[in-house]
Amino acid sequence: MNASMNKTYWAKPLEVEHKWVVTDATDKVVGRLARDIAVRLMGKHKPTFTPGVDTGEYVVVVNVEKVKFSGKKWEQKRYTWYTGYPRLRSVNAATRLEQHPTQILYDAVRRMLPKNKLGRKMLEKLKLYVGPEHPHQAQNPELVNLGAK
Image (cartoon, rainbow, N blue to C red; front, side):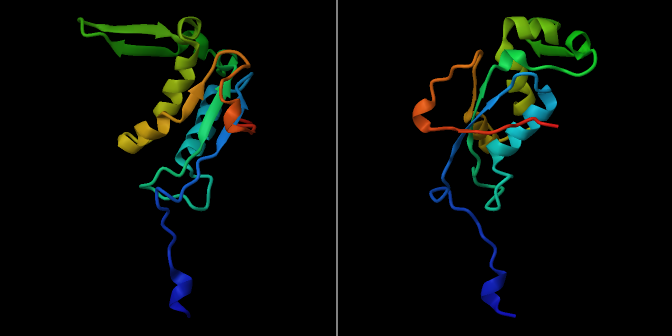
């Protein structure tokens, strides 16, 4: 067997081309949509995926206020955070959607990415917008259907 056939490809950061994709979150389940977004941000859908290199794409999500949960999660799912004062603050998913509509999908995707510098760099490539408009038309984003069953 020829030794040149067994070479492993390792992506270099300067060789990677980051595409832009846009998706509509209307009536998509949060977990399934977040899974597909995280895979796109990491670049795991590409054959050139390299663990230590950001090979992912920029993902623009419009209509994030129209996402949905399955079951009774709108009332039962709790988001907690620490403010610096004694005790945790907590709200349910319906309240979080009213106050900060982009935060539900942002937190779901953030928790699926690596917890290091590379993961924070990948998360910067996620652009979430309330409503159907976004300011990234100049990048010619490709329309993709993420979060489908």
